[in-house]
Length: 292
Ligand code: ATR
Image 1 (cartoon, rainbow, N blue to C red):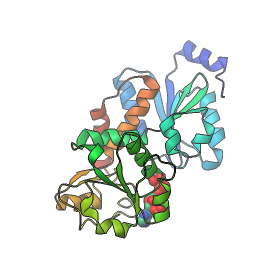
Image 2 (image 1 turned 45 degrees about the horizontal axis):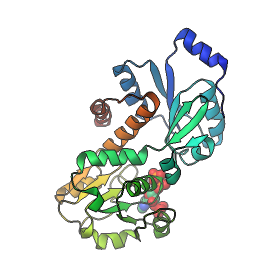
Image 3 (image 1 turned 180 degrees about the horizontal axis):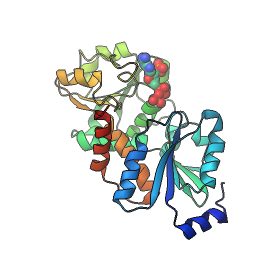
Image 4 (image 1 turned 45 degrees about the vertical axis):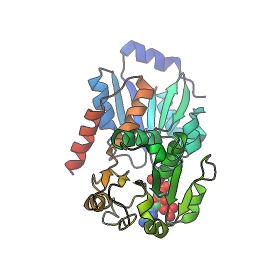
């Protein structure tokens, strides 16, 4: 356990310093998290500051110790530390444990508590716009990495039962269901393309659609039915090639902005107990990405 020393408590009360938060990762320089968290602190009158801090893979433990010594109250965790953080925290939320990755840490009485808001953030964003019954939906997830795992575990935990994972490496797609209470189907990308008409919801979790694979497609949509809901968790660019092609086919589309905003909002709520303005957060993200 990382004890908070008298010094930091004394300093905090005496000088009424802002509460400190951060996103740690490598790289973090382009993160939009400081923009949306700092705007939310300001809007709610919370005296706090959120910064991005680069911590390399080799220095993770030492870096986290420095943050707690300095009295940070919480931090987000991004690439490449989400899985390793599971070994560092004192307590882990059950869903984060199932996912095997942490993107949010709260420091409570010197103890580090790990959460995962990526999966639940994705689900909340989906529920805001997807108006069909998710429990009955036939869902295809493309990709089998960390993001896919967060989404699959969250969907299963929320009762979604018709799940297929398609991946370039099919073994990784099958592995996703190994420690999962709900079994699903694993397919190659070609196999999924051939039977695409059966899916109501298609979710891309691969990096295909952003630089340097901006012009590529994670899956070809020839056999998708009209009115299929196509989701990309990529938010930069705001409209990937996949979403452009899906719109041409008459599908409904959703980009990665809602997931990004909801995962941030859920972290913010864990730390402060307050609800940030989601519309304001969304506007900040969209404005920044449109300026590019
Ligand atoms: P994340 O944590 O963001 O999910 P990841 O764990 O590296 O990232 O997973 C990336 C996923 O995108 C993987 O499923 C990967 O496929 P493999 O399992 O076959 O490696 C997939 N992916 C990445 N680049 C790809 C490419 N150029 N073509 C096809 N699939 C790709």
